[in-house]
View 1: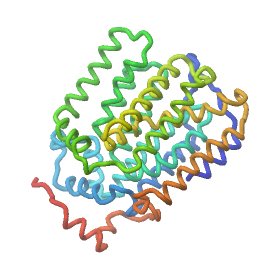
View 2: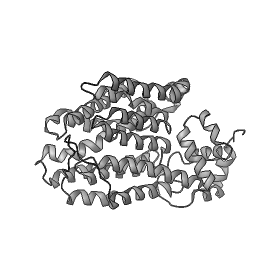
View 3: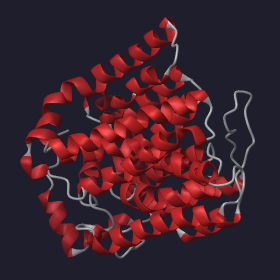
View 4: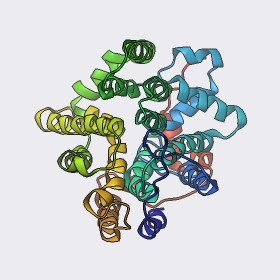
Length: 372
């Protein structure tokens, strides 16, 4: 999964097919549709892989006792709608994961196709975004997929479209709502109408999806000392590296003004979150929110060879350095991370078969299925 896009990144130069506003044009061909499907299959057909593997069976069994009209009462109605669909068609856990993989894969491909070196962006996405997030944080992975499509719109100052994509992502994991203020901060001279529309979408999404759960989220992610997220320092540091590179060399990056403002805001957000991690004990909440900053890595490192090397040249040595960095990330995480044993070895299979194993039966007995 990593070496295929890495090899293509080494052999391909940058693309410069532009829109009228100077941003790179996004297009899907058969090759990139194939990439979406490969990501979806890798995520969807995994078998007993991922840190939350057991927990998501709880959602599956809730789906057996829910009706469509019950979606208005659940925390993440978008994800539960996917669960109900999977239960209805008999796809079960594997169907849930395939649909999650399709959403994340579509978001990643849409985003990297807006970059000058899409294969490099894809290679950077594999070690953590696809393997760790896509195969471990199913609901937030789907939310992030929608947010990444929204970021493609936001770079062209399509503020309302960005807010709608983020609100759609919030149906799958409510924390996505917190990305909506970026639309207001990014605008240089936002019209009052645009501010009103973005603010309205943000308020409605917050009130419908997040407000009633604020107390529980604070208890789970902030006040619960046992919820410490191991490795948060390294993961937030990975966002800090491209943030500093961009802020130091931003004049060399071939961004139009709207894109430069967007990544400047996101870069400062990454730095503020890292400082907050060092000065507070809120490791879990910062770690989860930092997932929405991961697109910064793909954007900056895809532009970096042209920023530090010869513009529009192949700059293979710089590309190789970036690929070596992410190869190291993937190797170290899979071999030395505290919870990597939940991802290794990678196995495929139909997920419901897992319930017939002793471990699966123990998990099944631990569930408290809600009353209809």
